[in-house]
Length: 547
Image (cartoon, rainbow, N blue to C red; front, side):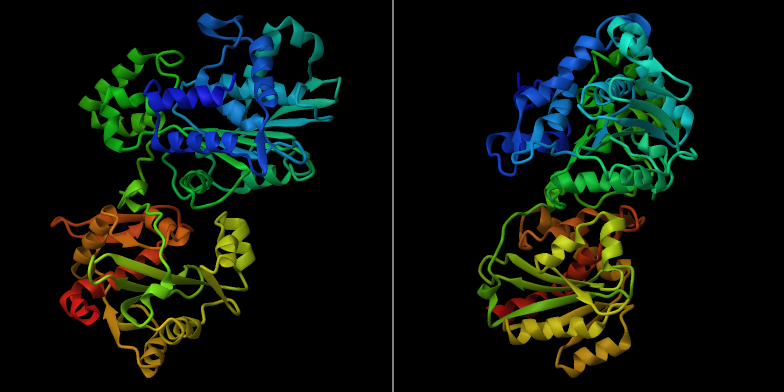
């Protein structure tokens, strides 16, 4: 049985209602099964952990105590993907890291505990070290205790596993399973085969994640699984990993070894629609009781103070996140164009400058006189000195974008604005694209503006405020949704657009803000918005120039 195919078939038929990103991820998995490249799908390896779990693992609590663990299809599909894809040359597992994002009471602890047992006993790793980790050791012990209770319920497992003072020991391969908290003294010097991080949202910094990930470097087939609900803490490791997972699903960040499965509502407003509840609760009706959720929702409708809690825990909505500007579907446009089409053409430029931390971005906006379709080409810059550290720490594929020619490096530890000038001159002299105006943010360095003017460019200051930006931003948003902007399917601009939130005043005017963690940049969007401000202010004049 191929559980991935069975699950996706149910999704497509409407039998299983899931979030857009879950559907998108399983669509990718189906594509990888049918069109193998570097990785192939091994059905036997996919089914082996499922067969182990359902044969040997038993429930320890409630009405199911003592009964075999029978996995739901959504759990089988996840486990199949996690274990079934292997390198066609080496046979080693494809996925080294996974994020399983699901609302509470959907069987995550049972599934985690069963996977931990499999990795301890049956994954074929000698001296396996399996760890359950959380911000507090008590939280980490939930998974450990459930695993221990599974062993106690199983006569077969009880014969082969030994409970020691701090761990569960498998003498046959000298393997162990242990619970660790953030402040455990034993974090350094580990040689982890499998790491399970429970409730990632409660961890305030990256240290636990980084230490545990580093502890796997000596293993041939390490596995790190993060299972969590949404949380209210922002700018933490959860936000970082969640945003990374979203970008992997959306195709912005290529990562063959990371498996994101994100059960969540597509829109915040869906929490009052019972038909949508299953999007964040795939076990609703089987594992999680519908009636219990109905009571919670009804109570929250009548008591606004309860809304935040139910949104985060039962529907995976990060309540403190700023309002997103546009959906990914509105942003996404995979059309491409040949820049040579615009030789000897006019454009409007935009520039968003930074010094060290943010990206510096430059934009040229062209337009087809007949169709009035917009075409955007960009360049980005980062300081060379801190580049490698940014790639490793931020988990953003700047290195891949550099290889593709979407990004350039400035010598030293800051942005050299002469490199920005050089790009505009390159576009003017080599590509024969002439910007009639270049709009720059009001915080730009005066010497750069003067340098650009000395090279013959007409520079226009773009004040970064609601009066200047609101209408151009609304215009740009409408054009994006109408697929009127061809940005050559740039993953960098797409990423910047998805990171953009909005701040709205009492009159409905909008300005852009960062919608995500600080490392999630919007500079490419800001640069394009500067160019769009020029288009808004000079529309008729620009149209006459390109006719």
